[in-house]
Length: 79
Picture 1: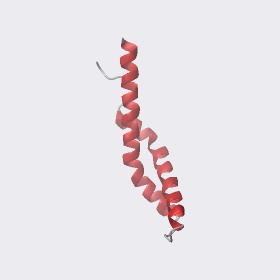
Picture 2 (picture 1 turned 90 degrees about the horizontal axis):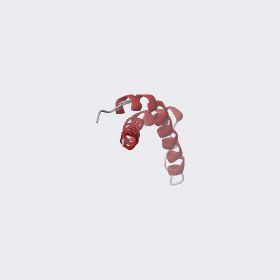
Picture 3 (picture 1 turned 30 degrees about the vertical axis):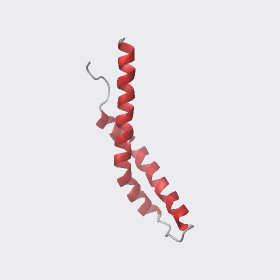
């Protein structure tokens, strides 16, 4: 069966801004929770930089999952 639609890389490129933004918000909130234990609160810029790095593998994994769901849907439609 031939794959139709977007590749995993294309899906990841489109979703990366959302994945990086979500990762940055989560990093910032994690630093706020960690501050209850005496840790430092990260600045917004540092949270964005860390989120940009963490967003790459997170978005790639999510894009692979979406591509898998597309393949399953195409397989079901072909039967």
